[in-house]
Amino acid sequence: MTIPSVSKGRVVVGMSGGVDSSVTAWLLKEQGYQVIGLFMKNWEDDDDSEYCSARQDWIDAASVADLVGIEIEAVNFAAEYKDRVFADFLREYSAGRTPNPDVLCNAEIKFKAFLDHAMSLGAEYIATGHYARVREVSATAHAGVRYELLKALDGTKDQSYFLHRLTQAQLSRTLFPLGEIPKTKVRQIAAQLKLPNAAKKDSTGICFIGERPFREFLNRYLPARPGPIKTPEGALIGEHQGLSFYTLGQRKGLGVGGVKGRQRADGTADAWYTARKDLADNTLYVVQGHDHPWLLANRLDAQDASWIAGYAPTAGKYSAKARYRQADAACRLLPSGEGTFSLDFEHPQWAVTPGQSAVLYDGDVCLGGGIIA
Image 1 (cartoon, one colour):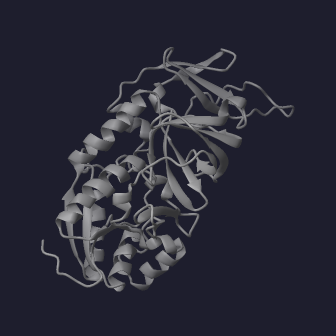
Image 2 (cartoon, helix red, strand yellow; image 1 turned 180 degrees about the vertical axis):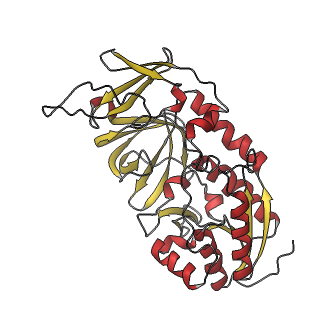
Image 3 (cartoon, helix red, strand yellow; image 1 turned 135 degrees about the vertical axis):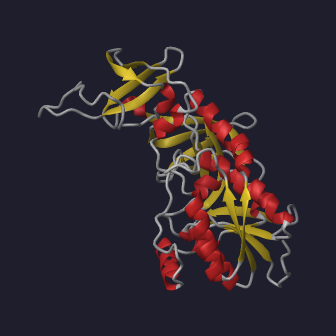
């Protein structure tokens, strides 16, 4: 594909068929960029099923491109996705952890395979519909130009947590037009432009699972190993279907709803929560009450660290998220070994989950993070 040269630069926009990437493409064209749309197909194992929306997403993306007046092409990254993201997803679940494949997908597919493809088309930048910002920091006598990843201005939609593994090279080529705009304004723009997907629901959950039941999906790839469900005191109260199917803090689907356990004075009982997994004994431990001590942690250790600046921040006071839907929590970064770090929190954190990402912030600046060990 030949991309004509324009003064403001050539940008390839990852178009998913959703409203955010659609408005991103329109905004960049309005700003004077030469915009090319690229639709990524990352999963094809069962794209003819009722749960996979890839076909409709492609139709929506192509319709938007036609209305906005830009070229669009589809590219298949399913092989790369299976090798770099899905294989890791299965390994983590097999080991009893709960991974976040969206973090890995951004680092390995959307800002690596996609970026490489865009550069091969002669693009100077890529852009996505993520809610985040990139800030260029001027060169000094001691260092060249560097780039910071910042939270979006719309704090309710900020996605810097999922982007914390991006590098200086990736950020230098990336535009996030929606970082400065509230989601309500994005919807308004889509409606005013009469985009065919203006009212389309935001996608949620893990991309390759879609709306299908999670346990049903995982059952295809991982063997079920039933085992005992016990209380901290060792009482047997049920049977789990396999430790891979449960995550710390999980309340629904435990199969122990009929077990009363500890009761209040009025005869009601606290809900049960997944609190620990013992892989050696294949035992799932559950506790009663949201604030049970087994669900609270003042410290976490993380591995496989990735820092946006290219090096670790100095030890000291910061804030962090141990899961996406969580307010920033005050913490202290502790010195650790190569590729690892520890965080001490001012207040106990709930259901800190191995496999999830611990992401560090200095105000609005996302510094990077690692995988909870």
